[in-house]
Length: 454
Image 1: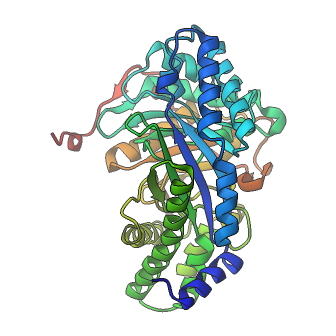
Image 2 (image 1 turned 45 degrees about the vertical axis):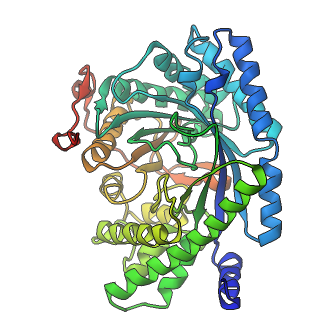
Image 3 (image 1 turned 135 degrees about the vertical axis):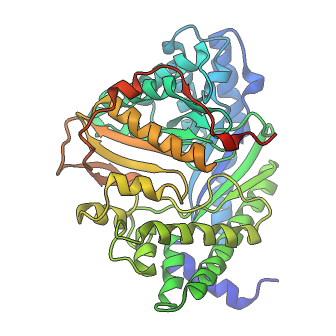
């Protein structure tokens, strides 16, 4: 039973420490929508999404009202569209039409974002995969709520370097296609190694082909709660520090579990997973960087940062798995630059560089996230950055990702402004030395030796 002390404690977390349920994400399978006729396919997609998700936003609001727990986003993820559109699409422009259909459906049901404009190409690309990837710049320029992702590698298959090379070009084209909005399209495009099938967080959410017809996944977030808890144990030992993080993560995850079960019951859709990631926002007091500072760093990026982040990530997961039997998705600490005020300050102070961020991604969730770089950064350089991050994921058997924004017309000293949860970011310097000859090699990087576990 929950006692009155726990109720008061949870209210305090919500009112003063920025605890929220970051998203309820309804995963919807579109496999039964596949059709060789493009117009019929679009109709089936629109009809299924608007039917299955018609009560999602209303349900989220009812749960908010009932429990006084903020639910920031209501989202949808769908089966990777490269699979769904393969029979009907003859050119990239056909896939763009599907993106516009997804956007229309998202607006009809009132969700914030829809993910799944995706391709899974860790070992090779089908014709449909390549067409979808080439359509991404226009698809993201012509839609408001659609998010795109591409899985380029895995521990089992290695890294598809042909796709890595192509994505460097696509990121640049997406930046150009959305340059009127500080290259906002790139903020809705993420590339993965070892992408999970059940991730509720954008821009990387898609509904895996092994999932049920519909599923509810919930992402919780409480950097402010963790930071406040750590304030009470300043100067204590690492053992006390770890126990405090674990207990706090347990409490935060229980809130997510409550919301997930309630949403599942109200919608008549099975509960999938809780993603217990510490996902920051630009709001003051809702920062992973502030947690690292509370652990003892002057700024993220200082010596000791990677060790502190490794500790944080591990304890969050240990606390979360005790609170729910179905922890999944990404689960851990996010370190996006534009979405975390403390990270922004660390970049502006010169404490945090692209190279240090890359090192930090070895021990946390996701990877190089919401990084703004000069608009004249070469496509091959972006491909090289992507390849490095994919290698970290492949070798370490973890999910890694890149969401990078080569902001057109911007240079060092400038900022990009996105607003809302996406925040703003200072332009970060990129290593000026080239990797063209490396990126232009064809084929794939083989899977590491420890991938052979059969």
